[in-house]
Image (cartoon, rainbow, N blue to C red):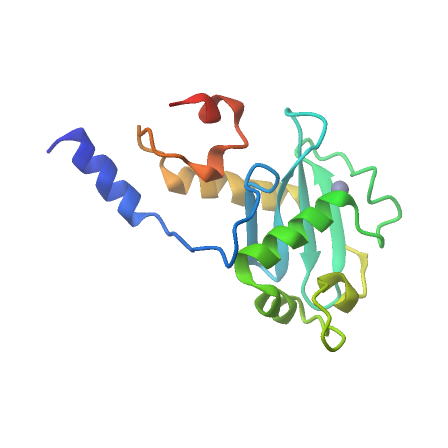
Length: 166
Ligand SMILES: [Zn+2]
């Protein structure tokens, strides 16, 4: 068997869910609806070494945002007003899954004709889940099993080294 054959089989086994509309993977490399949360990883706007791990719980809309080093997000402050990372995460989720699915998952009731997820969220603070969510992100990367290929790997654009491979 050629190495190309192996790479092809690995690629074809990876789960590919087409987003509802294109989203900015460099900004939000990982987003999922899992474990009763909308959760994901958001790039820092200013520091390429840092990412934020953000989540919103289903039902009580508890907000959590911490760096990958487990420092609390300064932007989240008191905890009930969403920081830019949580807003980017919500935007990415809506792009990935569609507003209906995201609002249903979070048990958010949007006002009639509203296309703003935040209008349906009654936010509160949630315990820090950064370690769990970040390990989910790392499992997600491992699952991709990145074969040597020149194809674009959108999930890895966040990593400067992977983005440079051509
Ligand atoms: Zn934040």
